[in-house]
Each structure stands twice: as C-alpha cells, then as structure tokens.
Image (cartoon, rainbow, N blue to C red):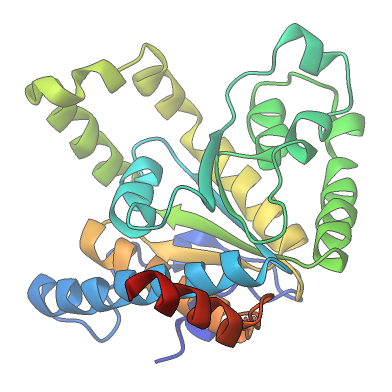
Length: 275
C-alpha cells in the first residue's frame, strides 16, 4: 500500500480532522505483524540514510506536530533512533527566547534546517506560530494570518535547495490524550513529562483542532506535503511514519559516490605492508 498517497493532505482540499479515524490501522489487524514490518523499515531507513549522507547532495527535513501526548518523542525513539547520529539530529522548538522574539518568526527555524547529506527532525516547528500564537492570541490575527504564505514560501525555497520536506500530524482523539496523561501519573519514568499545561490546554482542544486544520489545509503542497497519521495506536503510528519515510527516501534516488582515489594504487600499497 502506498502510505504517502493514503495519508497525504490534498493541496486543494479543506481538511476536517473529525472525519479522520485516529483508531485506524489500515490493513494491519495485529501489532505483531506491524512490528515485523517496522523492523524491516528501520533497517531500510538506516541503509537509505547512509546513501543520503555519502552522496551529500540532498537533505531531508521531517516535521512532527501534534496535540500534546500524541507521541512525537515516541515516534522519534521508535522510528528514527537507529539512524547514524553523524547525519541525523533532532531539534525541538519551545517558547522563543528574547533574542528569537527580536527577529522574524522563521529566523530561529532557518538556522536549524538540514545541510546536504543530513536528516533533521523538528519536534514542533515553525507551525507553532500559527497554532499556539493563534489559539492564545500571542499576536494579532492580521499577523498570524499572513504566516501561512510566509511558511509556504520558506518551504518552497528549502526544496529549491535540494531539501525534501515531509510533515506529519500525529492524530489522536481527546479521550486517548486523557488516557495517556493518566498513565503518566502512574509511571515514575514518565512523571517528569507532566506539566501544569497538560490539563489546562485541554480546554482549548477545539481551537487547536481548528488551527491545525487550517495549517494542514493551507500548507500542504506538492513540494512539502502534510500527512495525517492515525496515532491512537502507537504501533501503527510508528509503522505508518516509517513507511512514508522509506518511500520518500527511495524517491530521492540517492547514489553512493564514486571513489575519489585510485583504488588499485591503494591496494598495491596495502599489499606491500602485508608482505
């Protein structure tokens, strides 16, 4: 199944998240079979990342956005962790600093985009400036409403400089979010993730949903598509993301570069040393 086609947000349609089932697991009926496929995909991702790094002519930007507790960290751990850290890094965006607020909203983002041969994962991103900023009135509507245009131009520019962009919205429902918050209370290793805003932000669920819908609808383009990933089942979330990443990297047609040295000469020198 072509997951890129199945989960992409059409660039010509207004998306309604209430009509997308966050419990969907596509053709997979069991976690067991999905995990076997995920293991296969993570091995492929390691191989494909090596080609990207060796070729060093293209790059990949992965954007992760979601409601709280939808699994951005979990996706990174289960899907991208096997990648070589020499050519892959994660960048998380929290509230902007004083210096960052003194610049345009894309200034801090642009500095973190990938160089040739690199994969960069944004855990939250420039989209926070049309999500949190909109829901909490951090800036006037006349300002945040123009940012969709700026974002599309920014991403188009990155693509023109050989950066492939894939953007994932991890889709859970409100009840699943509450269930995950409650589990955090009972698991000591996860209690550090609990914050005062976990429950206070739930009051803005509908406002966030509307903000996500507009961002997804207005900023899913052919060159930088959004994918809505059903994420109530963590195992399927990880599988779907891995499938799309494999398909995307394959489409980039990376090639291992030719040797830059005379291999026969190097071989002769090595053979002399072994005599």
